Structure formats: structure tokens, C-alpha cells
Amino acid sequence: MDIFNLAENITEYKNENNEVDLDVIVEEFKLGHFLNVLSKTKVFQEKYETRDGLARMLSLLDATCYSQVGEGKKAADILRNIYENSNETSIDDLILYGNLAFMCDYKLTRRIMSDAVKLIENDEEFDLMKAASAYLVLGEAEENLEKFIRAIKYYKQGLTYIQNEKEPDNQMVLFIHFKLGALHSMTNRIDEAIAYLQKTLELASETDMEIKMNSLVSIAKMYGSKKDYDKAITYLKEAIPMLENSTLVNKFVHAEAYTEMAYNHFDQSQLDEAVPYYEKAIAIHVKNINHSPRELGMIYMQYAYCLEHKEKSDKLLAGRNYEKAIEQLEKTNDRDLLENALADVIAFFESTQNQKKKRYYENKFVKMTNEKAHVH
Picture 1 (cartoon, one colour):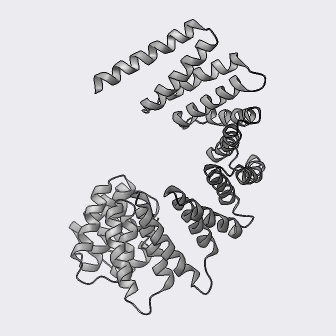
Picture 2 (picture 1 turned 30 degrees about the vertical axis):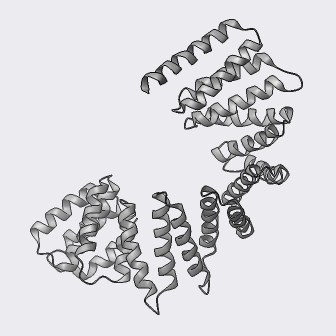
Picture 3 (picture 1 turned 135 degrees about the vertical axis):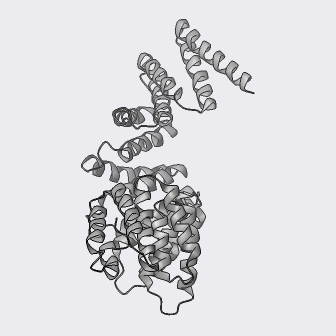
């Protein structure tokens, strides 16, 4: 939390008059009493004359405290003012401002860190780790602004600097490979994504099991999207037993692995094989209060279809799960998805001659279509 090492940096501004008050401010900050710090810095500045260095230090402290209490705009305004009104700003200053801005304003972070990396690139004797950290913060800001192509560029640059160190930080190298895998996947560069995640697996040690399991599931999903089912299933067969005996058991990535395994079978019309995996995925999702209704609704639809069409059809259970699917999809804003699902459910109840249920869902369909017409 203490990005700028307050206790150490404030020492040079202490004198016999203000020492006690400054010590109280430092202590309150260490304890996380951010509102107290804000009121005490205000009183301090009214009580003592604060010269440039100390005034700047107290402003940075205020910005940090505002970020911590959810007053991001106030924090960003202070940092922007310091950044824009500094006559001479060193690389260290810019990196500090950029890190503080990251807590409250990603666009401001981008501005400040872009300046920092320009200065770094023009400095023949710059510190590699300093350069790396600046690029990584820049990458993370772009990622949060959903500028994924730019984020990739900055993460790659940061990675280059870290790897050029005499003793690279292996954890950081591993983390950036994982990040780059995820970002390449998000920008639909599947082959590059797989390559970065394969490298992540190579770099992961026994203490990096969470990253390893996430990477295995991500690679499987990408092979699944390429319809390379054999490879996808190979990675899932490695991931699933690991997940079942890990800290990620019953977490989202665990459900994702089951869903992916189910879908690989579903997509190949291996419906009997898909059923148990859908059941395991559903069991995890329903226990998770933060589950996505869209995700769960689609899983119910596919599961119900499997129950309806598998070798020994179970129409009763299929019907129940189609209904559960609609219940979930009604919680989403995806009208088209709900419309398609309702059409399938109506067709199902027609085929099973359940006129009451068929009419019930037809009424929902008509009501929704009418609402749609009024909107347009």
C-alpha cells in the first residue's frame, strides 16, 4: 500500500516543531485510517509552513487516501495538478505518480507512464527493472481501458526488460506469459495465445498450481474453439483431477472445465458422454451466488437437449431443465437468446404433447415479441 515509503521520505522534512504531528500522520496512514489522515494533513498545513517538497509529499498522501476511500476523482485531480505543474520531473517521480494514478484513473496513468517510458528510452543507463515496471503498469492500464492490442505491446516490452536482467524475476516472467496468453485469446489470436500459455505451463513450478490449472483450461477452450477436440480433451483430462484436489475446487474455473468437456462431447453429438459433465458444471454454478444467468441458462439448454436426445431419452428431466434454462435466461438482457430458447422449449413441449406448458411458454414468447415491437 505504501507506494512511496512515507515514513522514510517524510524524515527529511521533520524538525523539532512538527515532528510529533508528522509521526501521528505516518502512524494513522500505516493503520489505514485514511479519513483521519486527510483531516490531519489539512490541520497540519494550516498550522505549519510547508515548503515545496513537504507540500508535494502531503498532496501525494492525500491523493492516496482519497483513492482508498473511493474518492477517485479528488485523487486524480490532485495527481494531475502535481504532474502538470512540476517544472522538472524525474523518471522516479513519473513512475510514482503513474503508480498512484493507477488506483484512481487509468487514462491519467496512461498519460503519466507514457511520459515515463519516453524518458527511460532516452536514458542510456536506465534501470531495467524500473523500465519493466513502468511498461507493466502501462500495460495494465490499457488492459483496464480494454485497449488489448496496446496492452499486449506494453506487456511484451516489460517482459523483454525483465528477461534481460541478470537474475530475472521468474514469478513475474510466468505471470506476464499468462497475461499475454489471456490477452491474445481475447483479441482472437488463438495460435499466439496457445503458445504463451504453453510457455506458462513450462515455466510453472509446483507452487504455481493455480496458474497451471487456469492455463490448461484456457488452452483446452482454445483447441475446442478450433474444433480440435482430441487436444482439448487431453488438456481437460489433465486439468480436471488437479482442480478436484485443489484450492480451486468448486470455483468458476472448475465449472468451466466441466462445461468445456461437456461441450466438446455435445458438439460431436456424443450426448451420453456430455451429460455427467453438464451435471457437475451445474452443481457448481448453482452453489455460486455470483454465477452468470446467461452462462447457466445456456448450460441448462444444452443439458436438456442431451437428456432429450441421448440413447435412452429422459423427457421428464429434459423438460424440467428446459424450464430452468428459461428461468435463468429471463434474468439476462439478451432478448434474442431468450427468444431462440423459448422457440426451442415450445417445440419441445409440443413434441411431448404437453399443451399446458406449450401454451405457457407461447404466452411468454408473444408477450416478449409485443414488448419488442413497442420498443421499436
